[in-house]
Image (cartoon, one colour):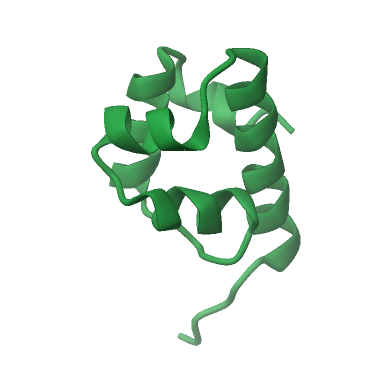
Length: 74
């Protein structure tokens, strides 16, 4: 089975993450710190450059204090 990369979904996920983070008034640095992720990693997720893992998505949702499903509501 070949690996597929859904560019549109990855970009929409990142844009939605950025929207939620900004709505909550949280800086990229603060989110990275609270999620225990590298700043550059979170930045690449928001820009739709990388396809992140479920584990990292869970950490991000916890840091934002939102259900994971909200990150996929786009």
